Length: 317
Ligand SMILES: *Cc1c(COP(=O)(O)O)cnc(C)c1O
Picture 1 (cartoon, rainbow, N blue to C red):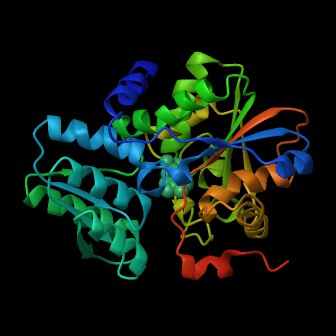
Picture 2 (picture 1 turned 30 degrees about the horizontal axis):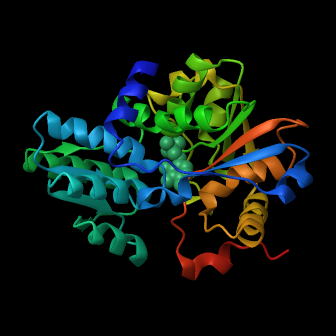
């Protein structure tokens, strides 16, 4: 299992590559939910999401071990983060994206000198392709969440939260494959086990919720949610045991609740976030945490939204 030491090492090693992102607050949000909410602003992170934390830790390690070629399979934030890091370290990088990947995300990867290969529409098609390209070039494939260096890197977000909000009582985190939340759990539950960590999934992408119910990794069929960073079909072999052992609760939010929360953040706080970030706000605004008068940290995990799609994501209410 990943340890607190691993997370601390990642924080030190990542220093030159990762922003220390600010905490934002909104009096309106506090009033609406009856708690004091602190927004950890990872939409202002390098490459536009927290994914750079894991990628920085893992790509540095791969290069240290002699990798001279890097690949990843991703349609979004992980691809951008890996391309950015490989480029910073001067290593050639190929990102395998779906055939229907959006032009904005491709342009971002290309801006970091990432080579694009298009393949299929599912991660089951993309991942073997990215592994094959890595193998052909004597390189290393960088997985999106199920890797100890990725988990430790994402955990650095937990360390920052404890430094910035020392009186935090609850931390609310979006859950996809579980790299982010298992990293945060690793850091927070060692340093202050009193703090509750609560995960949030879209109701239509509830693989971790179901896995916790059954007690074992449970896959769901292809999902559809506007929170595209959370569209994984099952938690990871490394991330799930951490989630199972330490997570305090996991709540589900509907597509409408995600839209309402997205609308609220854009309109009231003027922050450009992506729908995956809005699930934590959705859980708070819909009162699903069932708490009052608490200090709550909500992770805004990323801001890479296609501006042309903004109005599609905004609630029509
Ligand atoms: C990847 C991602 C998530 C989910 O992270 P996991 O480590 O897969 O659980 C949440 N939000 C954004 C913006 C992401 O890019």
